[in-house]
Length: 198
Image (cartoon, rainbow, N blue to C red; front, side):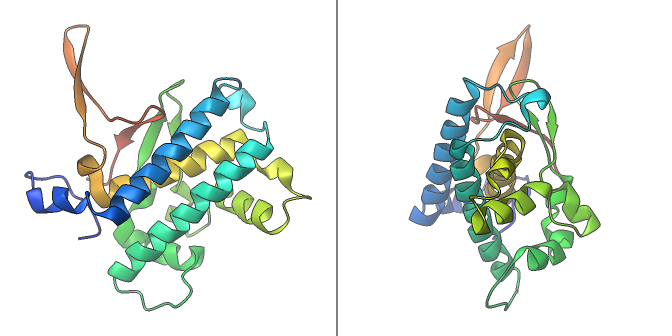
């Protein structure tokens, strides 16, 4: 059961989120989000700071994209791929089933819309993934690619993938009362899911 769809509560799906593998994925995500939040205390993630680069952001991008690669590799394998060395081209081919391009997140800092897989809809690799490849293979010459914008998109992309797999079972909503209205909030401190494929 690799892809989440909202529906009636299913205890068997919920129990799978407590496996060691899924819990490790959640901890990795939370560590990345915490590190990005720490950076954003000094450099707010607003559009005018998107091109700020740093060795700290370099580490966040490498870790986030490595986990994205691992998660997508497992997903396409569950969906039937026999590829020995899955890569971004293969992941784009599975977009019809994954529907990652349909997800939109909002940054909780300034409500800017984030669509980290938007390029998949055009069978292209996202800019943050291209930046990841640049800094992974030629870090000394391309440190300027380790930007706040790419870091934000990469961590948002990992959020999308984990939500796509586990949805509210991994990111349970909590109800808040704001100005007399109940609002559902996910536990992420950085992102809110605004649009999904369903």
